[in-house]
Image (cartoon, rainbow, N blue to C red):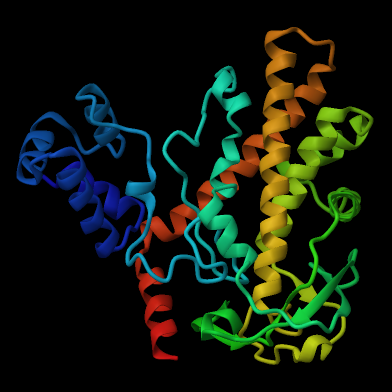
Length: 361
């Protein structure tokens, strides 16, 4: 009889490399004898696909994931769009998410979840410094351009300056195509000054209105929730939850220039690319703007959890529908982060492909 790990591998179509990584983790991180797992669990478990979790739970071997368990290998390059493993994955540009120990709080009643900022993974100093590209030698000339996430959508004006290229990572943007991963060279421009908080908040607020308007088009479960949320826009918690969800959605999309040729960036003409018919912003500008979005998400999520805790435990007078919608939006945003993490965890060959591609350039 096949042992439960093998059943999980077959059921979820997990790659051989990811399966071997899991066995290695169980052996190295928890000191579990792999041969014993193969034999002992087979004797106590049936062919039911969820037996493994039950057995591991009874044996107190089922632990919360940590950075050590979730981080793909090899260690470099860290994040292929941002330069570290604290980003996210999306279909247009590659990213990876990891969570520091203690950064995940499943119980909303846990005060630590409210006070310690669950998204602290996006506020780690080494990671922020990397995304900010603080050590660039930036020129004195300043150009103002408009960037956006969706064609015909809201725009954001930013001031940019050229910088001196030190390594190719600063001017290379990886993206997904129907044939696999590819990269495009970008121009050497960086933000000459940070985007004002109020201006960024206004930009995200415009997308909240845009997404709510688009939600009327079909009746998916998410659009049903968004349509109900439209009836409670005066509620501050609803506003924060919608801004969190919208900012996270923008974080997955990637920035583009409104005018082809801006900052010397040509449009992508490869029809197989997920960036086809768009003009992506230069690599460094994408990183710097995404860093601001990440900080925004971190702050909004912390505020949402704090407000939800006050509402549920302090019996704050708020419509229960608004509370429910807010909780759903917060949890859904976390779920999307986890989904993008699992993409890399279950198929580490994607990391290796991009790693080799970066080395081949």
